[in-house]
Length: 32
Image (cartoon, rainbow, N blue to C red):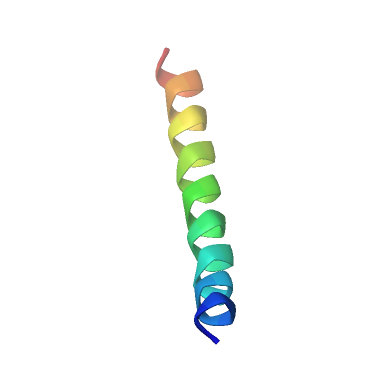
């Protein structure tokens, strides 16, 4: 039960993390 709960939020966390990383990378590309 705990693992299923963790996995559900883990996927959302990684989606947000990857989006944030891509956003920062694109900003670095534009500015640098």
